[in-house]
Amino acid sequence: MGQSISIPTANPFQSSSFFSSSSSKRGPGFFTKLQIPVAKPKDFPALIGSCMSAASARTQEFLTFSDPEGKFCPSPQVLNQVFLATYIARSVGLDITDTFNCTTMTPEQRILLGADWVWALLEKPTKNPRVQIAVRVLHLPEMGAGPPESGSESIQMAQMESSSRSVCERMVEFCTSIGKDCYALFLFFGKRDDRENIYGVLSNNFGAAVGKCSQIDRALIENFLKGAKTFETPSGMMQAIVAKKKGDPLTLVVKFS
Amino acid sequence: MAATQDVKGKGEGGDQNFDYMFKLLIIGNSSVGKTSFLFRYADDAFTSAFVSTVGIDFKVKTVYKNDKRIKLQIWEGLLRGAQPSLVLFSSLQRCAPAEGFQSDTAGQERYRTITTAYYRGAMGFILMYDITNEESFGAVQDWSTQIKTYSWDNAQVVLAGNKCDMDEERVVSVDSGRLLAEQLGFEFFETSAKDNINVKQTFERLVDLICDKMSESSDTDPAVTTGAPTAKLTDSAPPLQPQGCNC
Image (cartoon, rainbow over all chains, first blue to last red; front, side):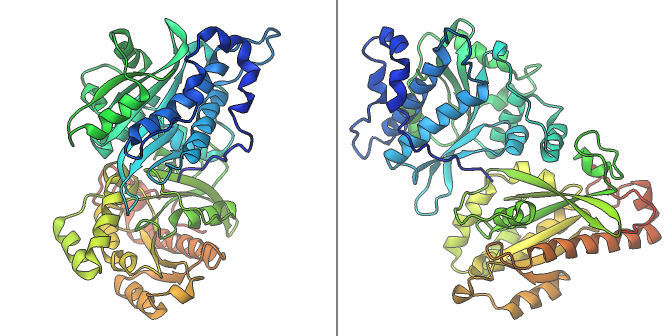
């Protein structure tokens, strides 16, 4: 029972001038990600990847912005919403939502399943998911987890239900229970040694770590990034997922911004 | 879920001021309207946009019965457990077209491992089909088998034929629904989440059935009052604690 996110009426790209002073230092490649690519119909992974890149670029602007007066400090939840709103606006603009949809989780589902949203590559004509990517955003620890999702009884019940496992473990359990065509993507909005970029660790094989590692947590997943010399792009990630042989394990480290 | 077993307001979270907590499940084929039904009941809201539920979800609603405060924890999703191939085969024979049924089942099967666990401790089920979709009606028998396989023996079931506002597209008659319910020993309602027809009544009837069963069981089955498991699922204690239910 995902909840749909309303698409912002204003073009999110129009307001990017707000950050122009900081973004201009990044070189000419930064805003090229925001331009809608002219892709061939068959180049579907590139289209999806471009939506992810646009969302990452927009989120990065917020992530790196430093208000001189120290008044504007977007919370982790706001950063998630910036990412999603940008992604959704772009994917609707490219008319790909019938093939690759995005379902945001209800607050209860976020706790129970550990995912913030789920992308799904849909089969035609049934629209059953062929591949799913459950996404959990991990923010820098010093940002905190944002205000606790409390208040409603159902939230507290969901927390009770899930208290024995970490959020990462719940995500892995959820994806593993579905199978190898469900990937867990942990999205790092900044990491310790690079606080201004967005990275991801994607795998359909985190289940292999269950039982072998004492705990599946941020530190364990961040280790994948530490050892990486090269990173996949979002388009490359989608290409790898589409090209993968059914049932095979796939683990990738991705740089989104 | 711990809270379900901690009847009589012993739960650690949430509003603890309640007399009973009932765990209910809404099950049925994909797109029969389970989520809409739950939203209508819990939030009095409806949207025609279809968003397939990812995994599972739940809402909480408190009702009152005979001065007792009853908290309903209502789960919904594609809560289909592992299915014996024989059962699947029989359903394929019954449901036409088989191709369509298979594709629908394929979507549901994605979540079967994670969702089976949620049958445990459930005291009541709303088994839903869509009156405009014969496949969903044909699958009712299989869903009934799921309930018998995975849930507590005393779990109560109401059969709901949803989308009764779409009478022009009806393919399952009221009599067919009623007859099947009788054969399975379930109560029956035709419902519409869109027009808010029989939604509240379905839940209220299910609560009544559970209360009746609680009173009956506590009189006849000592295991119920001691919290010892009586069902096949030995790891889920029946969520009945009080000596008889006066609700």
